[in-house]
Every structure is written in C-alpha cells, then in structure tokens.
Length: 107
Image (cartoon, helix red, strand yellow):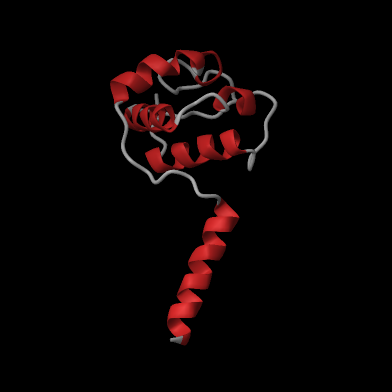
C-alpha cells in the first residue's frame, strides 16, 4: 500500500512540476514545413541557423522540440522573441514542427 501511495504522489508531483502538457504524438512533417515559414528568419528555412545567436533545430529530437515549444507557450520558459511566437501554436502545430525539424539534416 505504501508503494502505491508513494508512486501516486510522485506522479502527481511530476505532473504539477512539469505541467500537464499534451502527450507526445508524431506530427505531419509536410504541415510542419508549411508552418515553419515563421521560424525561418531566425532558425533557417530547414532548421540550419545562419546566426550563432539562434540554435539549429535540424536533427534535434522531436520530443525535445515539442517540449521546448510547450514550455515557451505555457510560460515555463520565457524569451522576448520565442514566447510570443509559441503562444498561438496549437498542440498539432507543435507536433508538426517538431516532426519536421527532427527529420532535417544539419549542414
């Protein structure tokens, strides 16, 4: 019984600490590419950033990109450029973007 209570408490604490983001589901890379036009000015058209101030998104793990977009959208991460860009994204948009960038090779 103690193990069950401990496991339930840890699950609840983890959910509260990291937010109740939608679970990861692979998106549509084609839709992600279409949505990525707004990201291209900083991160490059295929996620290969030409400016060292902005990270490459190409080849990143899809779940990592999704998690970071969720964090910007939810306010857990704050950035004057990224936060307003992520705020209007839907869960599907974030999944599509993550799938698109993860599939791209870095140059």
